[in-house]
Length: 401
Image 1: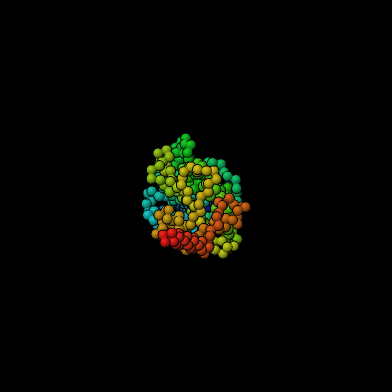
Image 2: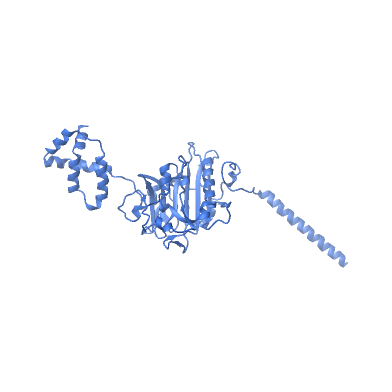
């Protein structure tokens, strides 16, 4: 305890010495954070500070290893722009990233100059993960763990950017966008201005985020794509509300907690750009998977929507299987969004829509005919057609006789 107090009291002198002897220019940013962390510690006793002034240089130097250790411990260990999606594995089912052939395989980015994994960090806490395309300046996808909504109020639209995409030595937390700046490796707010066709469309929806800080973190332009206005505010919003409600009702794990894993992304277009810089995706897609303790089964569904204006105000997107989505994404052979064999590939949650009709805004469903009944109907049609044909032929022959 006395040692701790002594170290606390001599910290100003140690910091000066450590800066002069140990720090190099490449560590300046970490140095400032470390010094601030130390200076925020509680103050000590003046008589100890007085005694440190009487210490010999040899005695002072003996404390440098201790100071170095304290400085290293005070450095933030959070990462944002990282080398591997596996560094943000907590947002994926079974902690396994998607497998996107040619882009993301076994958790590793094949073209790391173009695609950047971002552990989206706000207030020193990782909120979700994004795979960002620095060439098209849009996210390829964002993934997150849905745990239900605690704070329901939508935060103010204060758009942020990822500083480490521009400078690897920059701070690891997202920061407010400079409204008048064009960035080299990401979209800025200036790219979305002066257009009447496209919204700043969330990939990870703010309404899916749990706390207020979680919601604020979704307002980063690395989580945004140019999205047709009526599509964003119409059929896509309807889909988000339906899926959210389904997860709240059925994605209750064995511990009684809401838990669903969601991956949402954009399909880049071949040549459509906003402000001649930001790719306007041809389509958006979303998928989720979860274990439902009350249904004693794994559930999954997906949606796909063309990024064009809705033709009607009451449009709903078709709920499709994971297998159908994989086909649209050209991932049928080896790709996947959710690892393992638990997530069903060929079924959806549409069978639950009638159960939650009064509480969820899901599309109306038409009861499917059973294979037996539909097969019997076909046989009946064939029988009646054959009978009619026989009558006509028989009558024609009788007339000839």
